[in-house]
Image (cartoon, rainbow, N blue to C red; front, side, top):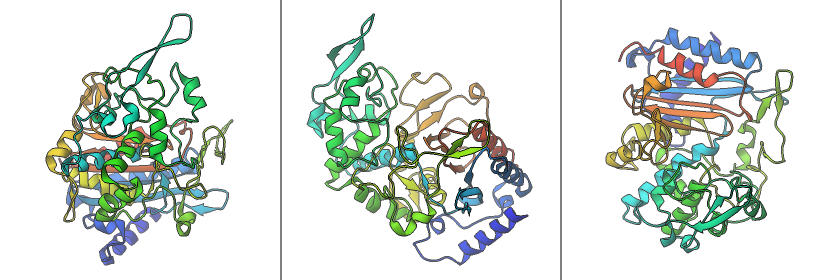
Length: 424
């Protein structure tokens, strides 16, 4: 009942909101689920399940949002934003979205191609000369490695994670560690992203460009390309070209101080059960320097903070073929190119990868509800999203767990959303 009352209140707010500052108001008007072929009673099963996960301390808190046919049909918050402070989660709270940043920066690259400023077939070295001559570390039998000449890296290699650039955890990890790279986390760096990326150009690659899907810092490199090509800092380009047109007013690399109370805390499973607050510093840097850090490094691969409302607006734009509420960011043909498989069978026959998104190739092989052509991804803090064009569905699920919970909340979310669809 409380969940239904929260939803009714949200619907009323959206109907009254007319200002451009409310991100959710940039989406289509709220709808009764029945109007778009979904069951409100069946969606209540999702509410009961997500509430149970937080009550049983499987998750600290979460926000789930579902849109169908351009209409918001579900938007609920569960659990706590900050357990120690006793703050309940709110639907407009702000989350570290980590690798969900990648889709936005990939979109920025495609916008620059549409502007005539670059081609994704271009060599990376055209924009960052430090990548003109790369080397690949090849492991030797018995230990150590040899360096061999690397093939030229293209922007398309970077978009599809086939550039050979990992996180520096390959056989040449000592060189990467000495250069100061710590996995995907850049928020504590007092160095502009372009300078960081230039240093990557002098480090051994983990694989030959084009040979393998190697997940890592490729989109951070593309963030630096955006700066070079546009002549703007990455944060400013994203703000003016993507966030402002879509009404994404709560999406930032570093949180404005006035919004710090809306930033959710990070938790993880505690030994023996329950939850424990993640450390503020250390190897994983779970809470991170997103409020009190240097505010210098704009990580295109994992740096953004956002809300479910804001990210849903971005995804609805993609589902609409590049447009939302009169603001066109991309051509439909570009969206089509971004959301088809570009990597053959490098990820197996079930899924592939496009230009910024994983794409589903075989529903039966995966064995969970969905549709061929579905695209999505997730983030290190246990956030997830997907877009299902066949069913005209957008789903955003934000939590802040590191490591993730011991339950398959992603599987439950997917099953309970699709069972609520009663009309194709």
